[in-house]
Length: 97
Image 1 (cartoon, rainbow, N blue to C red):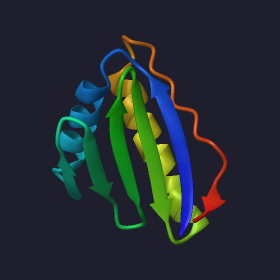
Image 2: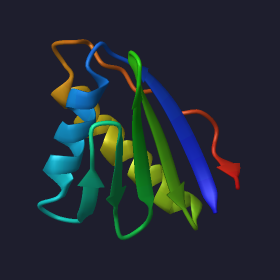
Image 3: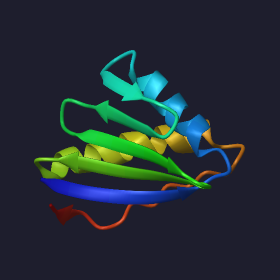
């Protein structure tokens, strides 16, 4: 399994966690509560966690293309939703495990 992670600074991590999960629930399996969320795409998953003033993201997939697609889709949507707050998503290196 390949993994990429990002830590997004925001004063409203719960809001963005819920917004992302609700948005994707119309097309794919998605679940969330106040602190954690999960979105299951056909090529991989994204786990979300709100901690303090940070939204933690973890993209996982069997293949590199899957991780790349999940990170791209999540980042694009989150940055669009958080444009007023100047949200920026920077994923770390893809690792095995």
